[in-house]
Image (tube, rainbow over all chains, first blue to last red; front, side, top):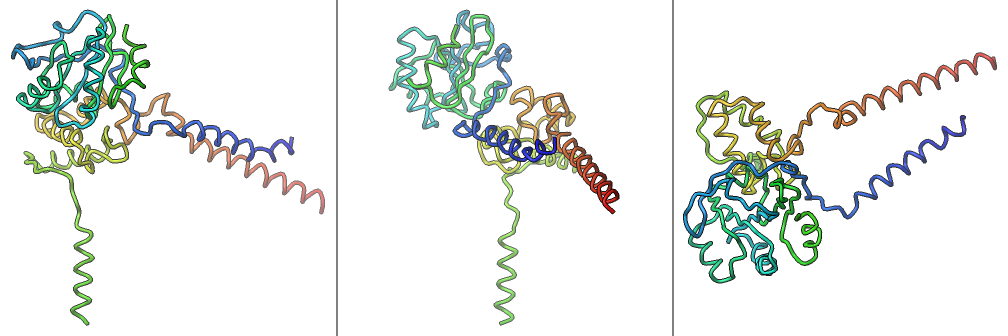
Length: 169
Length: 136
C-alpha cells in the first residue's frame, strides 16, 4: 500500500500531461454559442434590396445559413466568392449586413455578385448582439425545424464547408 | 539635479495615467456609474477573451458597453444585465462563474484538495509519532 502512494505523484503528473496535451492545437478563440438548440431570436429588420420590413415569419422554411458580413470586414472579401459558389449550388443564405452602410452594401453586391436570398440591414448591430456574434464574418446553420444547430466564426471556405454542410439538414 | 529628479518623477506619473477604453457616458447618478463600472469589469469580452468589457477596444465590446449603459439607465437590475449577456453569449462571459454542478469542482475543488492534503498530513504525522513511540 505504501509503495502505491509513492507512485501517486507520477500518476498525477501523467493525468495532467494527458489533459494538457489534448488542449494543444485547439482554437483558443473558439467560443460556444448560447443560441445552439434555440430558434432565431425575434427581429424586425429592413431588407436591403426592397426596403421591406422582414421578421421571423419571413425566414425560409428549409435549412439555410444566416451569414453576417460587412463591407468593412476584410475576411468577408475573402469569403464572398465561396458564398456565391454555394448559392449557385442551391444553398439558401440569408445575409445580415452588420454595422454597415446601405450604399456600400449595394455597391458590393452589384460588383461581386449576390449570393443571398435577401439581405437584412443591421446598421446598429442590435440583431448581431441578439444572435451573440463577436464579429464578422460569422455564420449560423438553421435546420428545417427553424432551430440554430451550428455556428461558425470566421470565413467559410472549401476546407471547413464539409463540417458546416453536415449540419445543414 | 533636483530638476532632473522632478522630471523623472513627473514622467513616472505620466506613464501610469489610467488609460481607459470607456467612451463618454452621462449617468443619471453616481450609483449607476459605479454599477456600470463593476459590471464591465466582471463581464468578459466575447471577442478578445482575455480582456473584460472595460478594457477591450473591439467593436463588439463598445456595443456591449453601450447596451449595458442603456439597460442601467432604463432601471434594469445588475442581475437582468447579466442574464441578458448570458442569454446571448453563454456563461462563458462571466468572469465570476455561477455556482452550479458544472462549476462545482472549479469553486470547491481547491478546498477539497486542501482538505485531502490536511488529512494526509495528519495521518503521516500521527503514524510517525506512533513509530517513534514504539522505537524509544
